[in-house]
Length: 263
Image 1 (cartoon, rainbow, N blue to C red):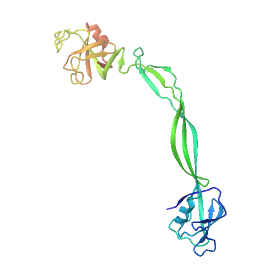
Image 2: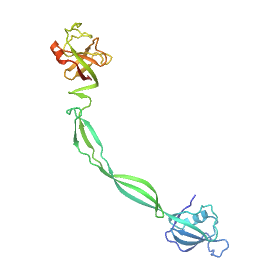
Image 3: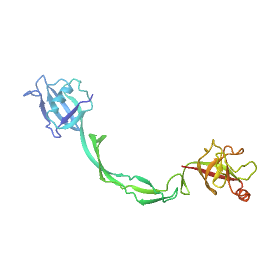
Image 4: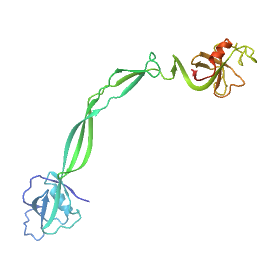
């Protein structure tokens, strides 16, 4: 593990560490050359390991350094060279865009699928503060500190027509069917529906497995009706609209339409 130190940016060329008045000729001391970001500095110490030397040195210096060519457990020898790289921090502030959000609001006065912008969006701005960590001149890490909003974004507001609306009617389900027509007077008809209602315009025959009896439906080209009748041929995606005359039934013919089950 590399030892982190705090070292003065300017140091004297020869420094006696941890040995009081000991001189460079003391047999219990070693001279060690420190290469500090490429600038050589000589120190004399009575410590025995790199870690002990650096711990002593850290008490006298302020700039943080790391030892790049030795471990703290390494034993010091006379004329040993240690390479130190400074560790510095720099606070950097940048500006970023804060994108606006789009908010949709239902407007029942619009048709389904229609929309209109009632307020344009405006991006905001924020200041991002990061801490950059350098080893020497090399950037080795960027740490996020905080983000401050300078200008709040303004939402874009869009009004939209209500969903699942057809001709002003709100529906819960849309079903594609083949639609035919019948009259209350057709052969086999009694004028009374399967639910007991009087047959006539505004009544449709359905397959109850597809559209439950009693449902209110909207049939394009016909209008709003009640699913109140059934028929032997009305199975699956089939539907029979009741009309008042044979001519209307012939005019209707056979149509592929989307039936809307209303809420």
